[in-house]
Length: 316
Image (tube, rainbow, N blue to C red; front, side, top):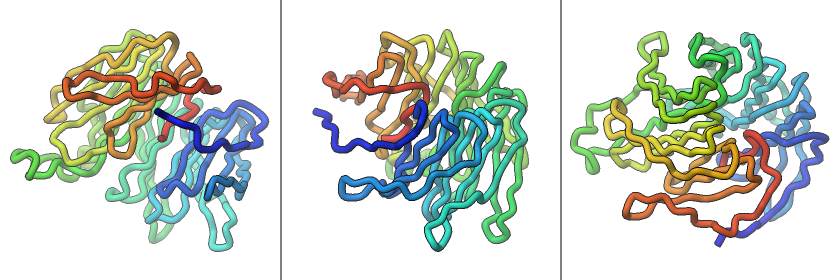
């Protein structure tokens, strides 16, 4: 049974595209077609608006929180081709920490890398490229690298691979494997999911996962829980969610989770990586879990209907 525990009146003047809780679940960030990003304190069932951030000149598609070890940092991306990183100051005021405007079209997705790699932000754009932004925290200086032509027509979503490698206790082959290699997955308008690996000072395409027959709208790499398996979920306009599995990050197998009644907009894993949330054009949020027979089962058949739009909710 899934129950509603709280609602938030955001005060946005147009469609909300994304709503994300921070690491501790104490702050909620929302973004909207009204061009604003809002931050709320959500404690004890109450919500207080603490920041109304104005810096974009178009719909804001997505927001992402950095790990708290870097302070309260929030990234946002917009149709206006810009990425903005916002920072909360000592007096609880939010200011623009960094702005990146080197994309030629809408920036559709932003995601911070695992904290172990440092302050790194990936950005996917409709111009087909992916930018990797790295901050030197000591000097507050940002460096950028770009994966050009990552996806034909455009990149819709990105997701980082966990930095945690399988423990030797679970997999005797894992002790010397892929220890510090940065990887991310991207979803594109070419109907593909691609996996990228950092190789020295450049990013290379490591795998191309083909199984969808229409634009892939979202991709989510499951958090690692120490097991010798990598798992990725992808959502597409073909009404399918596909689960991709690999034990060596080289060969991937695919399983169609379900064929939905409408376009599937987003997928999001729980913190332990064992429950997947799916949202789509049917205006429902459904939760899925794999049973002991490796079959995926919907665990909330009574899922409440909600006003879910493209990229609205990406975190549990």
